Length: 298
Image (cartoon, rainbow, N blue to C red; front, side):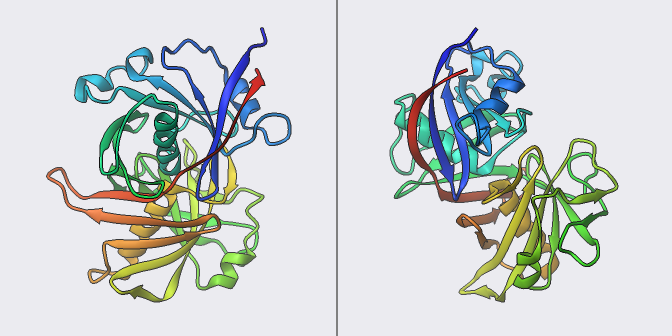
């Protein structure tokens, strides 16, 4: 049965999403429906689809309220191909902008909100001038259950395969260091990188080049391109920016800073590492913009 579905299009540094409201969890959308919405030729078009649903009305994830009763809203994020994903750093900022614009939550600058995701509950803060900051939580490195350990990455445009550092920030990443901007520009990411050994759940692959100098006024600086699982190359990846900064700090050594500026094709993101009682967390900050709204038959 065809239905008319209201949507909003939004993006964070060019990483774009189709957002739909379903507070009561009544929409019965299939992976094929999500892929249709994200299709740039016949649907709305986006790197992913975000469904706004109340956590209590999403049976598979309502248990998150046991740990954090304030996590009223859940971000049901789907990749461009309709598959679900644990987390999206740009997406969760755009999601909060959407909740605010739709009047589903009421917050002012500096306020925080707990949002449920498949990677757990995330704390998101409203910043100034359309920016938002999300605490991605604890991260891990080289854990073959959460991110690939000792991976080697091949890509079209690279002369030889390169070693990668596995980083998890709630979803899996493999970060590859390149020598210069020319190598970064030469990559053809219309074709997926080859990850060896194969990582079962799939992995987002980031290619990173350090700036010269690497640190300016206490802030580390890198450039990045990314191939996202279930999507392809995107103009930005928020969790990927965090993973890239974490990997670069690791490679740079003990004197490396904990604040980073990450340049992606779609703009600039900020990454910060900071201590907590449960271990080091990493946060992501950047803009979120809602572009237009409409109605589509699904």
